[in-house]
Image 1 (cartoon, rainbow, N blue to C red):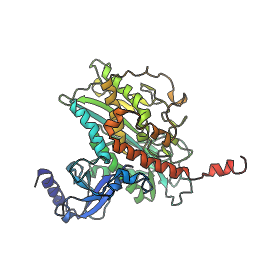
Image 2 (image 1 turned 120 degrees about the vertical axis):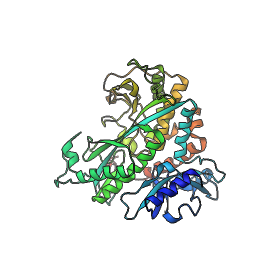
Image 3 (image 1 turned 30 degrees about the vertical axis):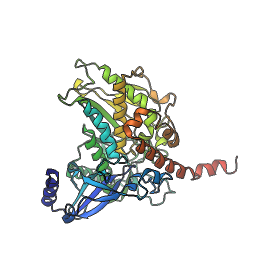
Image 4 (image 1 turned 90 degrees about the horizontal axis):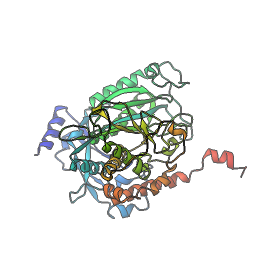
Length: 449
């Protein structure tokens, strides 16, 4: 028995685990997998799942190219538990574990359609250069009243006062206190799962909140965001509410983002390669920012992965609409916050809360990596209000997907097969959405065109 297997066995016994959730993030970032009795988890061999589940659409459908992307027999892939992802399920009635698994082909190779493996490929590029990227995500979400009818508009839930929010309450302590029990449970559940969360604030929208994570290893933080989303949804159910990570869930409210702060250190020394140590910035940092600017148009569908995502990337919605960057400028897509020399970083403000965190992290780190490798030069920093100027980013999922395979460098990093699969799944979702006739069309076009 190897050391990882022994560690898992000891941990399951220590916590008296009766059931294990074997989790795999699919292409949308949702949890797939199976439940296994704790007593059988290690004795029955490696779990298996059909590889096709990795590329189901958000509606559960399979794309037209499905059988060109997976084995025609829909073969099993092998799942291997990652010992670093063992966590309790604090809302379960019986002692339950959740363990994220890596996906392998039957020949033992990392499965190319696994989003976790996509991020791992990007991190390997940094490791080859003796570098270690560091990220710190900020995750926004809305609490909404239960709504079982998709034709009804969403609205904020009532808090402990019994009243609905009716005004903008950014950073309001009292607004958060309206949901005090929910917030306390979130922190308790996060601690039970070793999620490195920090501050929680009330955002601009009604019953909209943001949770900030401590900075750390990109794979670990992607795992934590993956678990955090499940945790927030489960906690909301406990209090008779929904929690949603849709990028733009309500017409009259702002959108929800997943901003990613990122820096790069020398693995051997922990020294930042972005700071010159004298309060200034290195050429490498400027090239990193230039990489974000250059490759975001190609990778935008990984930051805005759903048809709803592009409702957030719109003028006057407090989200980026062009490729400007700036110092402490929240109206730009890429913001350099004030910091100590050893904490120089750039914040990517494009990703929505609806992203698959593994893919969003992979996209932003790959962009910066390519910028550094090619010694790209960024534009001048923007000094005004960038999100009232011209729209430069695409406005639909279908248009974003057209650019995903424009670059040979992107294809080499993400893999041809994965990019084909991603485009096929997301085009399927776009076409399904495009067949739905909206109430706006019926109201304004039915008798007037």
